[in-house]
Image (cartoon, rainbow, N blue to C red):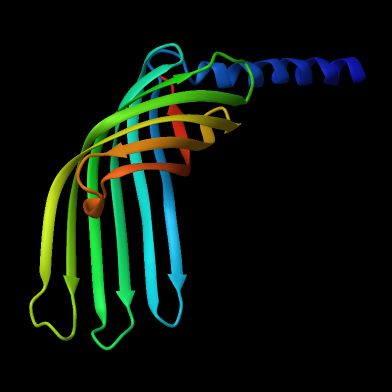
Length: 194
């Protein structure tokens, strides 16, 4: 009886190990959602909230090599609790084509590198109770990212992942310009062609 049960378990273990590799083969489509840069801070003088959500789609053009596009949606709000009651809300929407390469492995644990670059539209609105008019500004900046990540396949078709990246944004420092290090956490769904 033991020999009868151990054979299917061994076969299942071998197939599960190959399933993670099969998800990164040519033709596999990818749907993902990640988020990062979430901040909430509140004290007697100010209140701040910010966050970014990034849905993405892609396809493996070769084994372990995927290309796609991500829609970066960012929001931040800042309020200064004083006599003037200053408030500033900012919205960032970006379209970022990306390129990702997974290191070959037969494990559920996969390391990858990712490059992305594109444009980001930023809109900011500021107002104070002491001034009747709002100040609205908008611009488009270039954004480029390079990062290293880790993906864990919880099932053959779903991977949880983290991506640590350095990003460089065009524009001045007052309108999202400069460099920054960021961490995004999320998941991806892998849809093989067959």
